[in-house]
Image (cartoon, rainbow, N blue to C red; front, side, top):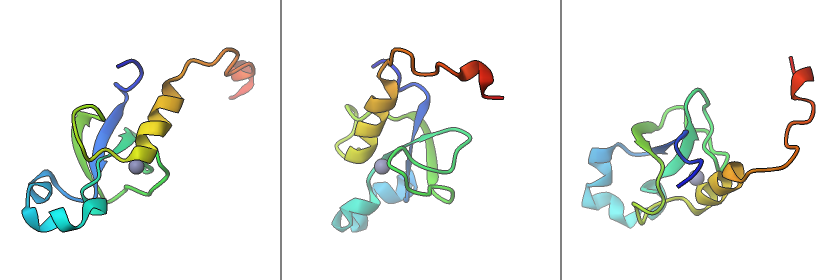
Length: 92
Ligand SMILES: [Zn+2]
């Protein structure tokens, strides 16, 4: 997949907790979100500062628990846009 390499998987729970059947009853807590390194927010806009980073690339095709909002946001961010940064040279 193009453009997803910069996005890491993160979630409220650690990987150990994700595998704990107790949490299966709380699907929203087991969602994998996408996050860029150096930022505190997920692609869907949640504050993930205290969440667990999994240090694997966010790959919605590899998990049934991918956050849909993150999937859409990553796809949007990955889409090439013509003239996306016309004033990049001024942004200093
Ligand atoms: Zn998300």
